[in-house]
Image (cartoon, rainbow, N blue to C red; front, side):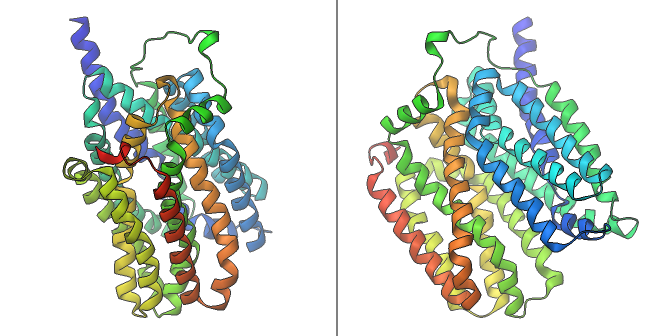
Length: 397
């Protein structure tokens, strides 16, 4: 009887993870800067400053947060992440000045860092406890796909609340943060509460060395370069569309429809895993993503480019759980440090996100078309070199 109750409670973790991820989405991001500039004594320079502080904190906390999660518990870390997100939204609402927004940005970045890798490790452990470990890609794909679909609705509806008051979307997010905090407390921890003995405790450096033995770094560089380049390019994406004559009012459709593609790809990404090997997927992406940059540079029809962006962005996020599943099944040297290993991959991605905008910005200032061509060339070179070092046997399954 007790076993059945435990199984039922563990199964409830699956739908609760949907609520957890959904309540963590920041649908107000598109109006955060507008809200900030409506406050007295604020400038665009301050906007860039508090945003930059948040990005720096995200970079610094990525790997330590994963290590913290593995050492002190994934559920505890997910709870801490929700508490920090609650502080972040509260800071935006109740401390209406630069320091409040800087604090909110820091709390948000640390919250994302604590979630990154931890929710994946938590779900993998839940499914393994239920003897459903092989269903990770399928279930996480559905969860994230459904979250993306729900997020589209939230992204579209929240701005309408600004007609009442620009603060209202933030109150909605505050309610969702409270809901998320309640749900995360109700998670059932799938791991037995057994402390790791001192002789088995590993440092981050030791874990990093262990992943090298499993040929993790080339694979991590490959997948991180793709997401890092595409995310970094988003800084210039909508400005470029505008210069080509794309209506600003329609930018939200690009943002929203990419999440609709994410929904469909994420929901059926497990079919890719069933019919194609990881090697075949990486060969496809070796050409697919650099080609995306070349197409954007070649065509000057903003509606065609917007359609391509929707497909590429939606596909990239939709197939993300396949990458996580591969890491969890092939690159974890010690099952006690799953979140740390995923965080190493995310740290490399953040490094690309940090470097690319600075290096390509000078070229974009001269010509967007040339900038996109350079992005495509550099990405193709990085992917080709890293693919050469990936263990081909490891990609056969």
